[in-house]
Length: 127
Image (cartoon, rainbow, N blue to C red; front, side, top):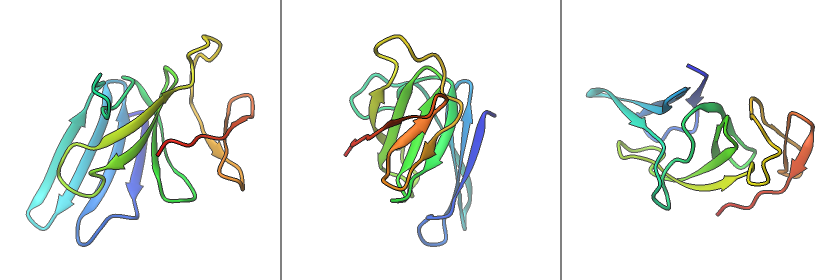
């Protein structure tokens, strides 16, 4: 495992743990009936998870969940966070210019901008 996030915003009686791995993202859903595990891998569809090696799982100040790959993909979870379906994402490749090698941490300032490694702040608006 590369990162783990216990979702405190879980709806109802369901509890969710998100686990980043070197081969995608795991969504562990705990219900009264038991546990269900969804393994989410790199997906080329428009709302699929981008990136293989998940290095950061971050909940921002708006309670939005971000999944960041070591390869520079930032994925904002937009649908199916609390149910037993595969989540959907809006994605942005922050490594398109080839100067960004890895993302191993993420920080947010008081204005909702993100910074990493070299403390460069980015205002991201992924709906």
